[in-house]
Length: 507
Image 1 (cartoon, helix red, strand yellow):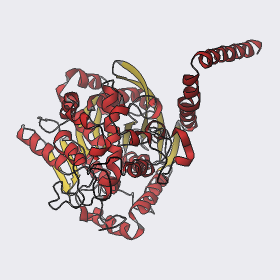
Image 2 (image 1 turned 135 degrees about the vertical axis):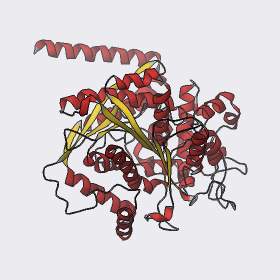
Image 3 (image 1 turned 90 degrees about the vertical axis):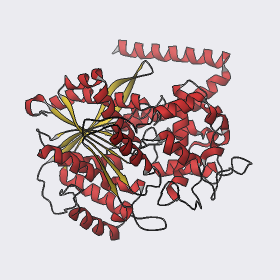
Image 4 (image 1 turned 45 degrees about the horizontal axis):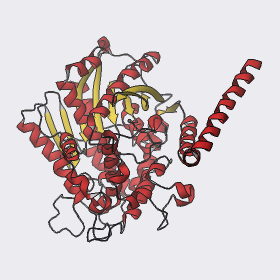
């Protein structure tokens, strides 16, 4: 006992001496460290430590939570119509997810928060991810799922078992017999101190997914999960940002022998990839979409359903992309983003002003545990009127040009990096099914069309494209037609992916 107390006292003494030296010789640094970054990091660590490492939920409760989520998102009046559509359409898997009287007995889904390492920029990162185990010891396969964009570094699937993305994965995939492996991504979750290599850099995210698959094997063995002949059917999917990583995973698996052998030697064999609403044509579709103004556009160049979601979310998408580019190339992000947007000054009654006061900035707001829409609204309201020219971001102009340093668009390294993120012209032999809405307001459908046409032209086999009209499913909206769009479609799109994976298992 004395030795423990003595060791504790020694550690405190060393910390105090270090703090005193810093305070005397670098008072400004000391103030910034103690009052800003250190406090933010301490709060982040507290949030992480308070997050559960595992949980077990009855399958009936998993489906009940999904139905509650569905009604909250879609609206009670629209739910019944969607259920009828799903029941009659050949695209969607038929499950008991909508059956309130379904008896699952003692069947349960197990939730795990998995900690593992991955390599990024020649450095090992301690990352985290979600693993879901189905109510069976002999699953249909393993689904590697890449989630959509998260603006909060802490509100990720593995840290929030009740978060909507986790609920969807549990109800649709795990409760229906699949193991789910879902990385939080580099720079998110446990790796919150790092920057996330956003959509422009797919390879480190693909490698992260592979590393999580390998790290999850021990967990599966401990829980008695086994597959026929020690061969694990691997399925890959992802939504939006994650849709791009899913398609890149398939390409790298097929073209990089070292990559696929690392999986094959552990019995993991890719059977099918189902990317959903992905940003596949970053240079040809996504960048022109972000840079142009869709409000009052007569010809509807990008075939969007409404300008609402693009206007609300474009600033946050731009911030993620530029921060990722700056970190990857060791540049100062503050010089690439409009400084007034970077600082996120407390004006216009922004949601977080009262919570973090003087520390309010892009750096600090992303370390808060807040929902996606609330985070996006901070960028959206701050974006208004940030320039004195005609390109300012406002109700009549949703081009992000005024939100970035104009020199960025002329940087050759930026242009090269953006083009290298495109995945529209390559030959696939492994089955791929692309899924998209006909009129997506945030990730234009042309991404999927260009990827499909390019892959067909390259000679791809076993390639399919499911394009659904928005009117097929209803959703709650602020105004306009009550039909699904990018954000609400995810709730049902995973049922299409499940149907694609089930068809493989029938063969």
